[in-house]
Image (cartoon, rainbow, N blue to C red; front, side, top):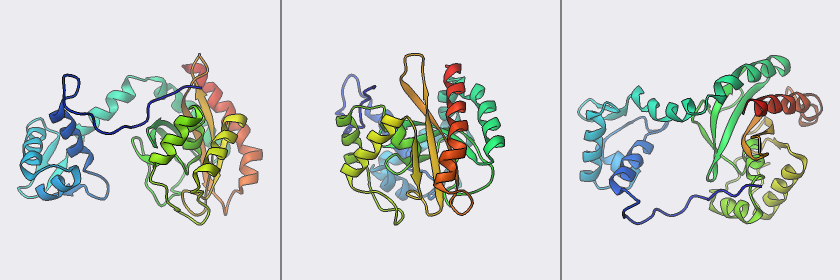
Length: 261
């Protein structure tokens, strides 16, 4: 199993930490689907900066073409996507994995996604949907909590137990549905189960009616670098049916993607 550092407190400024750059990233992250257009005061509040500090960063981002303003509201421009696609383009594996995922979607008639672990969240790096099955709109770059997702629990399973517990304790654990597991000891047991069986199924813990199952994508050293999942609606496909009829196809697809690494 691999050990990856959990997200830690912001380090103090120094030779290896550029505070102004970190603040710039805070400003960028203050924008979201819920706050796509913001006033200066809203950006300052969302990024934890003073109005003067936020203003300097916004004007810098505007000069570089990453932000536009109508004089009152600030909005990110499509150029901001360059930052995320730099990661995807540095890993051409996902372009090669897409046909495998598309074939899986055709076979099982359910949506397929690939994600990686980032601190307490999963981040989607590829998604092939069939139809909208979630209240949440997902795409490349979308984040979801690891503790209540099949992808997240499986990716956590590649870590040592003490690291898993640290990340769970750092998570904002909430009962998103009546099925959501919130007890850390129970979550530890479920991660251990995923580690043992090398797949993970989560039944309606992220969203009512949503069932998903995940399989690992591993590199040549056997280290899990990502995970692949399929998601479906409980009123159309039960957890038992998904495990019995779709999991084998998912595992096979994950192995094919692993061979591309």
